[in-house]
Image 1 (cartoon, one colour):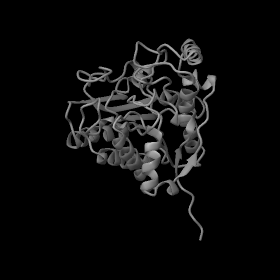
Image 2: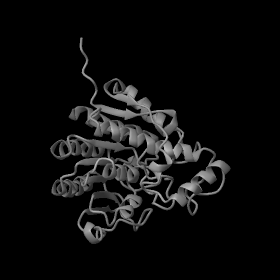
Image 3: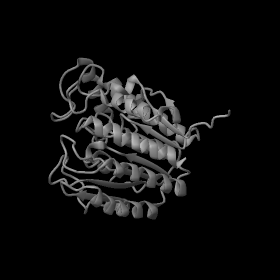
Image 4: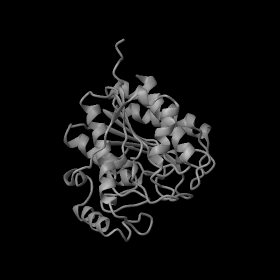
Length: 319
């Protein structure tokens, strides 16, 4: 019997699984396999097309990052010591290659979407939204979302790229990297920066210059759950509909779920499933269905497995 080709692709492989900061660290290298096991248990691996990651080139990294910073990561990766920021993101031997593979994985997924080989795509170890153009931050070495946005502008000529972030932490590396760029439509729900790293993302931060009004920040108080999320989510949808995105990047960090060890939001996995399903509808209306999901944060392994799997299931169910 003829079996329909999967329309959702997932990028998996050791090259991205090894991105992490040691066993026992909140961002450990086990997060990839936790997700894969959940996908298998739910019978979803057979419902997606699996793609292999690759290492991003120096030129691709420098589409977003400063050359001097890329040099620094290479040097400290070879040495295997020191920090890549003020103290949150340690270097280790091979961190450059692992981080460049995270970027490469998102580029593989993006190319599949842009060339019609997939309608939805997901990369679990990706969404490193704190890294700025010039430095690492918050466990994030290279900002794969920033590189993808630059690629979509430069290689494909897109002028309305939506970045949607429901991680507990504000996506500051993306926000400030494109604060003055109207091509990047930004919408971010996160724990209020008065209570959580990185301390940014106030409601008043709406973009500057020509980009003013293209950025939406929706800080939520500690303890906020699904009710507060769904209320904020209506504003996200209205923002996206007003800007009619040609492509959607969805950073679906699982650290906004109840029980995460380093954050204080109380979402359930239903928040992630709902957001993914609704974004697919918006993508169908404006972006030829193109939506790229990236895993982002999440330090309770059960939450990571469930939230990311629910996102992929929403992608599959949306067709």
